[in-house]
Image (cartoon, rainbow, N blue to C red; front, side, top):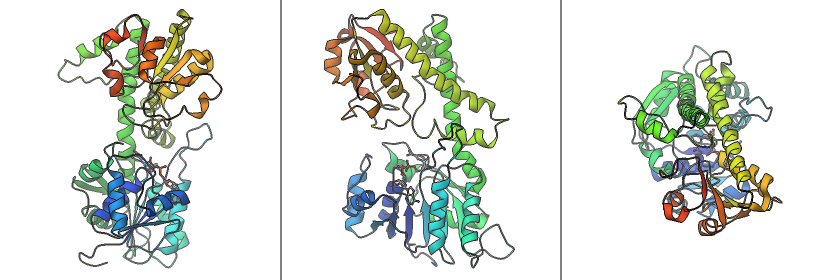
Length: 421
Ligand SMILES: NC(=O)c1ccc[n+]([C@@H]2O[C@H](COP(=O)([O-])OP(=O)(O)OC[C@H]3O[C@@H](n4cnc5c(N)ncnc54)[C@H](O)[C@@H]3O)[C@@H](O)[C@H]2O)c1
């Protein structure tokens, strides 16, 4: 690829990150071949449809598929740039060990088709050193190629790490406008990746080395986790001392250099509740606050459950409405959700006394099966339940006026109703 010829791009992993990324690159005029191991995902995209919920993504995918700029299959095709956006969960070993096997599997697939002049970019959130490990795997599979950072000569290919920091619900906008950290294995690799991102990113693209870019992504989410843990710890202290945490935070935040975040029932989702463990895994001795924040945020979930049970036990004839299951407001993502954990635990304990209100769910998740709990709309819950527990700050819950809650016993874990202490 020379001069301004548009590169052919292969995006590996077509989920919440990979599909919008593939669509945006295609919108910039590059031919994009998307790869996913799941046949139904591939078939859906080739029909010009989408398998995930994301604002405006359906129209964009339909347009780029119709124009022939985006195709999908389960196998890699040769390309000039390979973008890897596969999952990086932690292993189910009880130890929160990062599982980079999906990245390494993708690297093996890339190794089979990569040629001189190509660029490989890892976007998956990854422990420090993963991009180098991926480079080593490609080097082992392709001794005919010179890989960056390994020998004296000019490398044949470029390898870089470029993390995502998008907000679900605003992915297309943020993919385009957010600043990006671009970490090359060598400065030359970073420049190659930078030239690629400049084609479709309007935010500032800042180059660094691959390890720093990997750590930067983890640090961003650990920063959020630690700050939320501070708010959650405060809320538990306030409960013990009979204080109103919301009032205290409101007052403290009047200090010009204090900005305490909002407590909640814990921290969920597949990023903030997961990524800090990647730091802890790499520096167990040193990562004391980061580890403690994870434990504090998990402890808050159990604290909320205990308070909710105490309220339910104090009003044994009342139905209990759990408002929300999602891991945060106004989305349909229930992964690692503390609200879901609390509501399911209450359902197991109190059975048909429990009503769940979740406007973003068609059915209750599997762990509610056989408990007797039911999914109801907000009006039914307000009519029938004597105990209300707010677990998610969905807009639809925030606007319920005090007069519709008259006579109810309320535990507001999100502070959405200022009239409730
Ligand atoms: N979703 C977010 O908001 C977000 C934000 C920032 C970073 N990330 C990170 O981005 C990465 C991807 O996350 P996601 O939310 O898109 O995950 P996802 O589960 O939605 O999508 C991943 C896709 O990769 C596919 N896949 C797995 N192995 C594959 C392989 N070897 N070849 C081809 N396809 C394969 C899966 O079938 C799936 O469709 C993760 O590392 C995540 O931590 C996600």
